[in-house]
Length: 396
Image 1: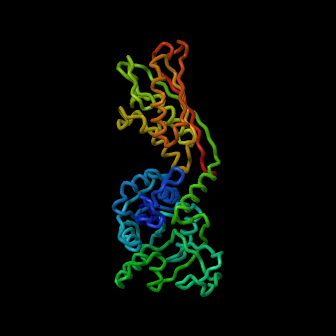
Image 2: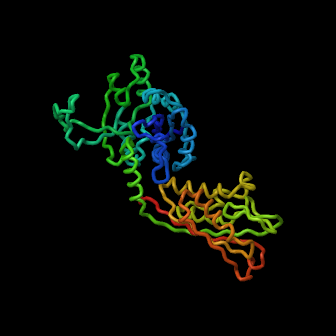
Image 3: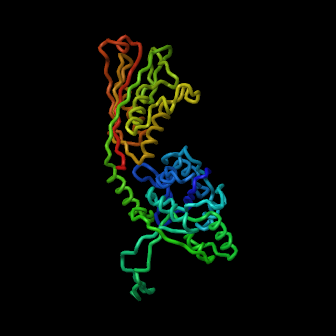
C-alpha cells in the first residue's frame, strides 16, 4: 500500500441468507455491475485511499475476482483478497491481519452490500478518522420506534432524539481496531456485528459523523430492486461515438468478422486477428467514455496481443463502460467490402456482439455494403468497418 492516509477493508464474506438465491447479495448485478464492484470502485477512485483488502468466503473467490476486474480503476491501486471466518467479527479480524500499512493508518471498514458509498461520504469518514481513533457514519431516526412483547403488542416508545442509524464505512486507527479485536477474542465473544461495538466493548470512545441516506444496505430483494431502479433513473448522460477500422487482405483462407470465422479466398493482415468490426466497435465504446482508443489499450507493439481474439478488446471496452456505472444502449456496425458476403453470417455476428456486450440482440445492428468497385475495398484490397455506440452514464 502507498503512504496515502487511508485503506479500505471491504467485508464481502457473508452468505446473505435473508436475500435468498444462489448468489450472495454482494455479487448481485445492479444495472450491469456487481454490488461489490460499485463499492470497491468508489474507494479505488478516491484520491486519499491507497488500496483495498476484500474479505471473502472461500467459495466466492471466482465471484470476487470478477467483481474486482469490473470495478472502476481496478489496476491503479492494489487490491488483496483475504478469506474470512464464520462470523463477521472473525472476517474483519482476518482482513485486518491482511493489511500491510502502518499502525497509525486509517482503515475504512465497509460492508460490500452497501454499493452506494459516495466520494463525499468517504471524505467525511477520513476527516473524522484524522480527529478520532474511531468514528462511524450515522443518520437521524425519522420513524417512531416502539418496543413490543412476544405477542407483538406495543410495550413502549423509544426517544428517537437520541437514536441514530449506523452505516459504513466506519473508520479506525489500524492499531486501535486491531488491538480491540485481539482483546475481545480473549473474552470468548465472536458475535459482534459492528466494529464500533468492538471498540466500545474495550472501553473505547466512538465518534459519529454525517452518513448518507443513499448508502443503504442490500438486505431484501426489494432493496435490490430499489438499487437497480435508482441507478437506471440516474443514467441521464446519453452519449454516442463512432469507430472506424480497416485492414488489408493477404494470404489466407478466412477472415474474422464480428468474432465469427468466415471462409474466404484471402486472409486479413493484422497484429491481432484483424477483426475490423470488433475493432471499430471497441473504438466507438472507448470514444463514448473519452478513454482513448484501441491502440492505446492494446498497442501492436505488445506481443501479448499477437493473434489475439478481438472479442477480448471489445469485452475490455464494455468493462470500462460498466466500471463508469454506464449502460450500453445500442451498438451498430457497417461493413464495407466486395467479398465475402456478410448476409449469411449476420445473425451469428449479432449474437456474439450481444453476448460480449451484455445487451439484448435487438440492440445490435449490422449492415453490409460494397463501395461499387471504387477505392481499395472496390479493388478487393481490404475490408473496412464503421461503428456507432450509444451509451448512458450517470450524471456526475
